[in-house]
Length: 324
Length: 294
Image (cartoon, rainbow over all chains, first blue to last red; front, side, top):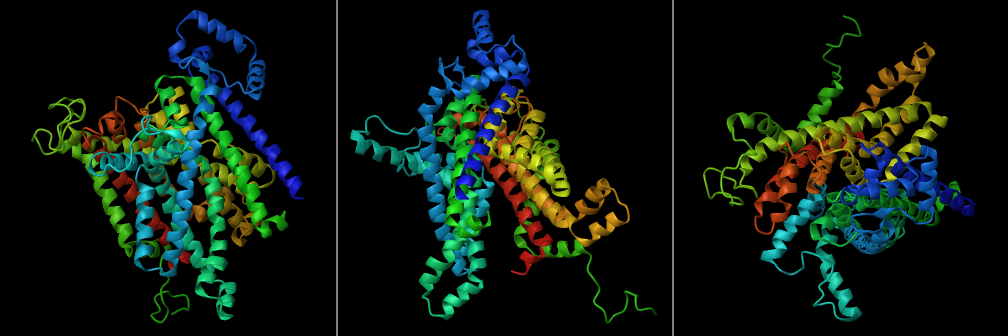
């Protein structure tokens, strides 16, 4: 049964990927102006020669459905078009940068989940205590502050007042000596961007953990556990937290698109060399193939993340496994 | 005197739901603070430019003058020497307008999709929910960036784009409410006396599903303002209309030399969204009896 579910989810994911490609194709054609101009972008589009070669390569003189077919076939082979601004295939540009983005996103997510749930658990022990109020305050601020603004505030503080962490780029050529030195240097550069991106989700997760812990702690099986003399530590750690964490995994999976969006802004603030800065640079250059390629690629990342979360969740929670 | 006389002193009078909601809302200091904060910001944006009639695009002093150094520009100047205070006062108009318009678009699309899916179920629900899921895999900011880049960065396009990328969450909420309410007795009763689908959806179910949707609409305004700010930060805002976002977008290169150019408009956005979300939280408590008991 599980295998059948996996196959069905896989097919559905592939359909979603194709749908994103169709959307990209439509966007090129819905945009005002000649599609060849759009594909060329502002940097390479001027000459008639280039436009003619684009029209030929994309079959722009053919009926729309033929063009769509050509586009999908190319994408299936990993060809997301050519960036005339960078003078390189879009897919190469993206693959160059995607590692940095994923490193940032997963570090921020890990930080948010670990610290967020910890704060949430502490807060749930005393619903009116200091930590509990702190959780509320952090979550309201985290929800209301523009993420890039938080980042810039950190830059202002850490650039002059407390020069502890680097405020720009991913590594420093002079300090990255050897593989270990490189890793350490990247980690050092990662602190501020990951903290900026993570704090928004930390706020949500701590609030969510507190709410679901309070709910779980009021349930019958916790009372049973306490009645039979299970220590408070075990009640929290083993019985309550496990159930309270499930909704967080779901939310983190569902929010992946939003986290990638946040990464775009954070990367731009800290000059982190990922997909976000690439997107920003290509928007400045009106490099449409690259922007559309990034939209497609990040949608694929979200689809894969959703697929993994969904499957993990099915494995982790027997109730869902049995229900389907 | 009849039994139905509501003036009977021995019976407690039923409170009107709106009065009860207002009573709960009023009892929350945080919610009142949010209301006060937002009211001040709205009033200053609307009437401030009349009292402080300085053109925010006019160059008044040396570029990047810090706050409190000259009386001409008390909060300093930006990278072109324009008065920061004038920008902060006028800039709220565009930001609030885009935020509210985008939130309206979000809510309209969301309720339309959610209502149809939750009321008709079956294949209508299947089709609409697949479309919703499709929109949810597109990272919202990137999608909005693409839309604004392809179709000019003007205020209507920015508002439309934010609406187009934000509606799925509202649609899911509306769908859940419609699915819950359509099975209730008063809906069956309406159907049994011959009410048509349109009437049941818009006149019977929607008013009863409104409470959570109002809360979500309020929070959506905050999200939309943050979105507009993010797009502006990336340089995707209308260059001909002064807005907090535009100030941030044009000041971002100078943060290390001039802390105020981004800090001040960013703080305005933060305070606005803070006001909106505190009001949203208060409304949530006011409309939701279950939460109130805690």
